[in-house]
Image 1 (cartoon, one colour):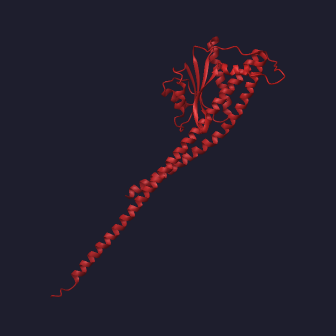
Image 2 (image 1 turned 45 degrees about the horizontal axis):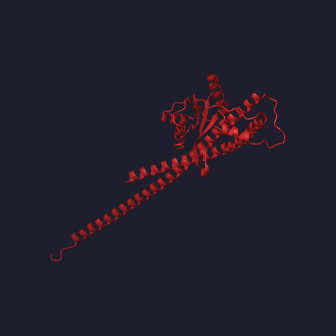
Image 3 (image 1 turned 180 degrees about the horizontal axis):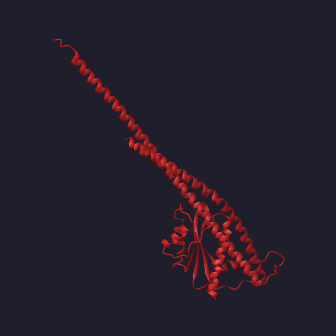
Length: 303
């Protein structure tokens, strides 16, 4: 029984150590999410500025010509996590990649865990790119993806490409859900809405660059904002998912520690009861033994 108590004590110590690790992970997730949320607000403001630039270009040059969807290869960029302890985060994203039916012709994934989740769905992907370790790396990741897309477009010539982004996005009431966002060609609904919106100023927009170069610069800036926003949303939701899992783990550990404490109290009470019974039994046995000896030592009155 003493060995069982020692085993329970070791389990309680282990659970206390695990709880410390979980608490540390929870704190780290909460701290990491804050700068990414700030970066998300900043890139959304910059995206609005880029859209104003596109609006000005369209107001000066007229609506953009419609671009037909490419019937050939489809490219998907999936933003996942590089670390675990965030539940089924990457599995939900892998299912979103397949939501349209067949797997894309090419999948560029961000994060080693995302690569494993895609492989679990039978989706072959390019070697995983590392997600940024901090806010400063978001711009580098977006620039690297733009360079990669330029290389792919250069290899295909005039055939063009269709590119979609798959990432986890924040929703109402602290929830999150995987989304698919069109990157290339530009969404005709977006460009059509810009063309339909009247120019609010009396001064017409002007620019000094040739129209082709100006449009290319605006589109490249827009692609940068979309990729940056997808990457930062992925990091915000990843940390939020990990924080939620750590909170669940912390509650489960606390419940288990209470159960172990109850078992230890019950076991100690059983030991105390057993020891008291042993003392009582020994006392009664000794009392009985002394009574017998006293009876044997008394002289026989009939003698």
